[in-house]
Length: 317
Length: 317
Image (cartoon, rainbow over all chains, first blue to last red; front, side, top):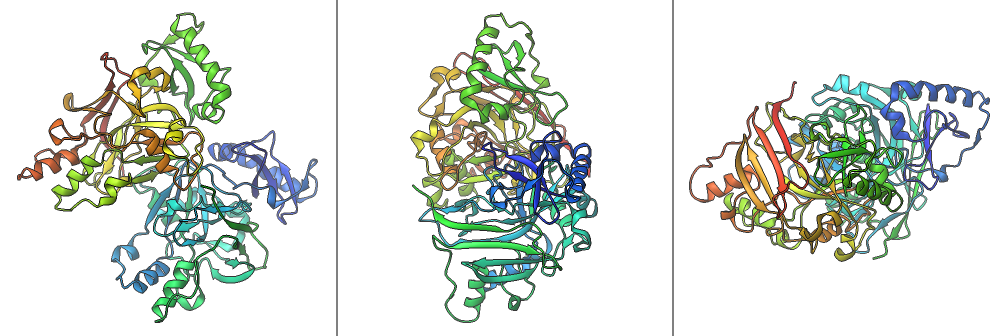
C-alpha cells in the first residue's frame, strides 16, 4: 500500500492512503491519524489501512479526493531516529582518492553511520534553506526504509524483516558538516515492500533514481547496482549496539554508481571525478534559486514515490 | 513545576505532576497524557499543569498517590532531537593533552556538537546494557534542557528563552563511538526553570552533580563553575543552521571541572589525568555488575531531579 502525510497545520500532519496510480487519496481517520501511530502498532493498524487501500484502488472509497503531492509533508515528519548508513562506498572511495587520500579498509568492510536529528524533516516541495555562508551546498538523493522495532544485535537477514515502509529521500549536505545543511527531505509517498513487487528483492530495490538540476538531468542511477550492502545489512549496522524503535528511518547515504562513468549521485562526487581527471572541478555547487528534482522510476517507467522538487533558497539571518 | 513520565506499558508512558518534595504524584489526565503533547502546545497546556502542581503542593489534589521514582521512564522517553553540545571544554582539553595532542583552537571557540538517535532513552533505573566487546564503557553525567521551537540562527540570549524544562542525564559512552553505548538515561523529574529559583541564573544551574560508583563517591562537581558556555549558547549552537523543534533535548556533554584537582566527570577524564601525572591510568573502565548513581543537589542539599541509579549489564548477543 501507499501512505502519505498531508499538511493540516499540525506538527505531524494527517495520515492518508493514496491509490496505486497516485490519483486519489483518502484520509485514514477512524484507523489512525498520524504515521507514527501506524508504526507503533503496525500489526494491528496496517491491515485496516490495507483494506482501505484496496477499496480506494477499486474506486469504492466513499470520501476519496484528488491527490495533490504539493500538500504533502514528509511521510514521517518527525522521526525519533534518523540515520544514514553508507551503502555506496565506491562513490565515497572515488571522492577520497580524488583528494589524494587512500580510502581506509574499514570503508569497504563496514558501512559508515551518521545519525542526525529527526525533527523538522522536509516535505517534497518545501524549500531547502541554506545560510549564505554554508559551504558547498549539495544534494544527496537516496532510498530509505522505515523500520519496526529491531533489537540490538539482530543479524542482517532478520533485520530485513523489520522493513515497514520504503521512502525516497534527499539528504541535503553542506561541506563536511551535515548539520550545516537543512533537514533531509522526503518524497510524498511511503510504499510497503509488498507493494513494490518484483522490484524489491534481496533487500535492494531495482529502480532508477533520477536527479534533475534546474530541469536538466544531472544523473540517473540504478539504485541496486551500486549498493554494496542490502537494507538488512544497513539496518543491522544501525542496530549493532542499540535497539531501533518503531519508526526509525535508515537511509543509504547518497546513491552512487559502481563505475564513475555511470554518473554521480551528488555534486561532490562529480567534482571529485572531474578533479581526478586532471582538471579543476567544473560543476559548481548549488546556488540560491536552483531547483533540485529527485524521482525514482520503476521498470514500467512509473514514478514510485512521487517527486521531490525543492528550491534552494537563502535562510534569513 | 515538576513533571515525570510513568511507565504504563506504552512507548511514551503517562504524564504526571509530582510535588515539590517528590513525595506525591498526580496523573495529568484531562490535561495531557504524554510529555511531547505538553511541549508541542506549551503555552496552552503548561498553565493547566501549573494549576495542578499548586493544588498538589497544597495537599488538595484529589487523586494524589505516593511517588515512586522506580516507576519512571525518562521524562521524554522518545525525543525527535537529542544532541550534546560540549560546554566543558577544559576537561576535553585535558584528555587530549594527556594523549599528547594539542587541543585545536576551535574547541575553545565553538562548542562541539554530537547528535544521536532519540528513541529508547532510558529511565533512571533501567539497566545500561553494553555488548561484551564494547570498548571502554564509561558514564557521562550532565544537565540537559528540553526546548520549545527555536528558529535557526536564533542568538544565544533569545535562545535561552527557549528552555522549557531542565533535566539530569547520564549519557553512556564507549570508546570513541558513542553509538556503541546504550542510549542516554535521564533522572525521573523534569523541572521548569522558574521552579529552580535562584539556582538558575545566567543560563547556568548552580548545583552539584554527584556521581557514585558502586556506592562510593567518584566525584562531586559544580555544574556551573566549569561550564564555559551557558545554555543559551548551547541551544544557539545546536540551532546555528537548523530549527529545533519543540521537545529537542540539548545536553552539556559530561560535566567537568575547570581545574583537574576538583575531580573528573567521567572515567576517561580521570584516566587522562592519571596518565598525565606520569603513571599508567589506575581507574578501570566500567565492568558488568557495576552500579552508577548520579544525582544533583541544590544549595539546600535537596535532590533536584531525583537520582539515576543504573546497573551496568551485559547485552545478550
